[in-house]
Length: 353
Image 1 (spheres, rainbow, N blue to C red):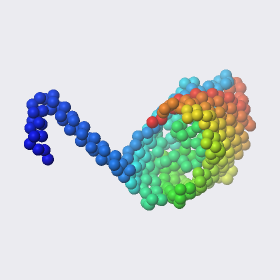
Image 2: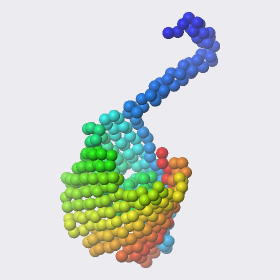
Image 3: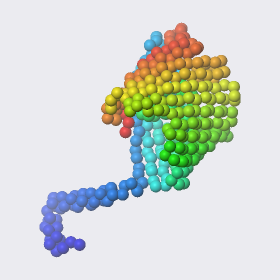
Image 4: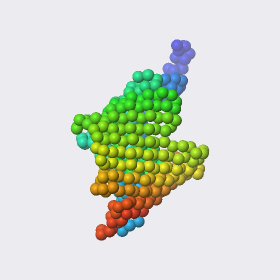
């Protein structure tokens, strides 16, 4: 309660309009400061909203007469080119939450190529989840795939261009899944989904089933349904404080006749806090004209991608040199000439927030 002397002082201040405004501002700031301090005392118990994302652009050139890109997703445009703008809004409550992840630009369009409705062409992920217990989470909606070493966001990939295994595997799933945290080092996921990469709904009555077993940072993944089956291993090892070796191996078959298989190693060396260098060596093979490399028959491809990563605050600069070598002549290096090999260069700039 205010005393008489305090009230008298306030009345004197209020006689001057300027002083009165200053007084109001001080009271308001004091109230806000108190509120913020009170909130800081128990922020760990409060729900949180977050806004994050990234923007990426790049330059790509091939060492051939005609500009041509490897047959993988993203970083496949010529000259000065655009990647995507990615905006993610998420809410994390004590028992539940959601993620709304939208994308704009060529990379985003390629990522959601299976969408039918115009509005859904923006949706990279859109799901809600509920924690049934401390160790079990139920998720419903559209979410990026659990298979593979690489992801859609360029921020989370060391190499800017992507592998064949990632490009011809699933990008996302719409469905439901249960995640079980058995211990700090063991996890299990079980899910049922629509056709891979169909964002909005189940248009063709296709049902897929997925499962994942996580053991000490190594993951065995399975996706299958209606004649399609894929088994995938994703993991890695910290060989030293500065040297990491990532591993991805996968095999997929369609109707038991056609399919693909591959293996990739991702050695990465951190030279300093702001610079790292990494290599991706991938062997990719398709059978009976799967369509990744050739339209008919069998084909193999070996690619080596060397990427440097310079970090300055939220900026990431990535110069990259890549060589692809195929068992068939699949690269149009000039108007009249096909080749079984291709060398290309990419320089990318990424900003994350």
